[in-house]
Amino acid sequence: MSDRPRDPLASTTRLVVDGTNLLHAMARGPQPSPPATLVGRLRAMIPAAIDIDLVFDGPAERGLRGERIAAGVHVRYSGARTADAVIVALVDDARHTAGPDTTGGILVVTDDRALRHALHVRGARSAGAAWLIGRLERGRLAAPAPGNPRPRPVGERPAGETPDDDDRPGWQPGRGATSKRGPARRARRRRSGC
Image (cartoon, rainbow, N blue to C red):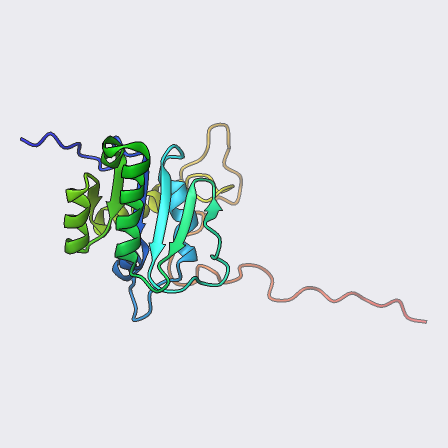
C-alpha cells in the first residue's frame, strides 16, 4: 500500500503547470487553445492558498506578458529556453531559497517523462495532465453559471408555486426548442386619420 495521498493537491503549496503540454492534451482540434483560457479556469478550481505557475514554451503571448496575471497566478514564457528548463529552474530556485524540504510541496502537472524524472530527483511531485483536465471538467459540470439556479426537472415546481391554467412543461432540448409560440405578428397600430 502506498503512503501517497489520493488527491495530488494534498500538501501542495505551489502548483506548476507545463502549460503547453496541458493545452495540447486539452486540444480537440488541430490547434491548441490560447493560454489565456487556462488562467481563470485554474484559479477557480485550485484552492486560493495554492500558488499557480503556468509555464509556456516560446515568446510571451500578447496580453500575458506580466508575471502575475490573477491572484496567486503567474504566467511565464520560456523565451529561448524550453518550458521544461524553466520548470526545473523554478524548483531549483525554491530549493535553494527555502530549503530542500519545500520542494515536497511543489506539484508539477506534465506528461513529459524526462521532466518528471528530473523533478522527482529534486524532491518535487508530479501529476499527469489527465488528472488536471479531469478536475477542470468536473468543476465545469458541477458549478452552475452565476445567476442561474440549478436546473430542475421538467414538471417539478419550487415550494409554494401553484399551477395556473396554462400548465405547459418548461423548456426541453431538442427540435423546436427555440421556436416562437405566440401570435405570428403584432397587431398594427391604427393611425388616426385626418
